[in-house]
Image (cartoon, rainbow, N blue to C red; front, side, top):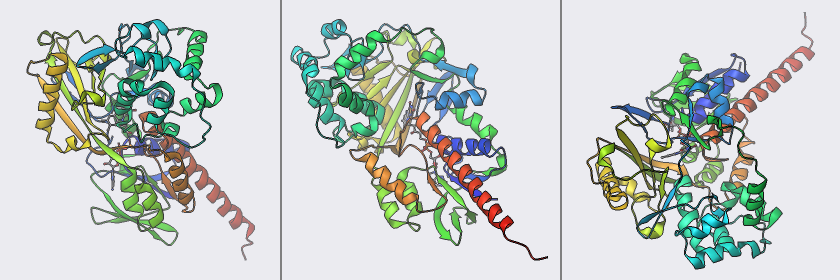
Length: 483
Ligand SMILES: Cc1cc2nc3c(=O)[nH]c(=O)nc-3n(C[C@H](O)[C@H](O)[C@H](O)COP(=O)(O)OP(=O)(O)OC[C@H]3O[C@@H](n4cnc5c(N)ncnc54)[C@H](O)[C@@H]3O)c2cc1C
């Protein structure tokens, strides 16, 4: 029987192992190797004095079904919670030292409702006029990938980029919009321009024809999480895996082709042989591990750059904070010259994040435009977060909880040309039987993308193993065995 080794016990590696077990109906022989003492990777939820703090991701996009489907399969349906509805204003943008509500009807960076957009004081009148002129902008004739910044500037103008698109991208992808690939991050905009020319006209038309949601079920929320934090998901997957197949606190040091197998050297001094290896590790680590197998592949993998980020969660007594926290938080344009890129009002966004008499706020720092800040120690990051919240939201109270997480080289950057680079990488991988790449570096970096990638990889492995076994059985049975 073929032996599979999965390197990396984040959500990608866990999903791969889970679906491998499922698709092979319990017959899969696999080992999951995780370098740290804990499974889950960037998903880490901590419970402290009634607060629930997410160190990495805090929710997932419900529109992509992979996470919801996995939650259902794991029996977590009753633990799913959507972001709180009923808020009059969902997100703010810091502009000229004040928090301005994002105009109602904004779909990412394009307004779909005229009146709220015209009334908003976030964008100047010349800026609004320029955004409105989008309906006359001709479609591009180029088929080449373009940066998000170039696209937004071209269609909606510089102010839409500075005030809306760029800070949103800093929040979602921790990215520099001048380098971010439109094709890989927002293919829907490429498609809209190609097919309909004007984004505004298309979006306004879609909005009009869209039926209002039939139900207010929690599954209709755009962002969802689990009542006890996202770690509930990784723990539920881990509980379904064969405990003998898990090796924690053990790093893979190198992978070397060895006859028909791969030899995997581990940090505990042992070696294991594998027929199939899934690299569910960040691309730069995968590059180091594959250096001896294919130097060119390793070089290409290093072409996917990563940036560093940090999150600081601060808990306060409700009475100490005058701000109404009537929204999900705010984003910060670079032109504001701040040290933070975004802020989530976590206890407004989701239930069960803070004790009844407290609130929880989470601040984001770093990213492609300011990643050096992540080198500071955690106490310094907490000091910066407090100072920024004091200046922006007027919170001067001493927090009752403060927790900082630094994430080095954590966010893959889908730069212009990313799709072509991934395609080249996959062509080389296809020449190495038994090697599989999965995770956030390639076809989407959100949790649903990682789960989808693990699922797809597991399916490929099982199909390939069945095919090989059948070929082997067919060859064997066609050979006449001398009596
Ligand atoms: C601050 C932050 C906030 C985010 N927020 C969201 C969000 O709200 N929603 C969302 O959908 N996504 C979010 N993301 C993105 C998402 O969290 C990640 O893309 C996803 O968790 C990556 O999972 P993974 O399994 O591919 O990688 P990882 O979680 O990085 O797991 C890789 C694992 O490999 C292990 N490893 C590395 N090297 C070795 C080795 N040599 N041997 C053995 N093991 C090794 C590591 O220890 C790690 O556990 C966020 C990311 C960050 C950093």
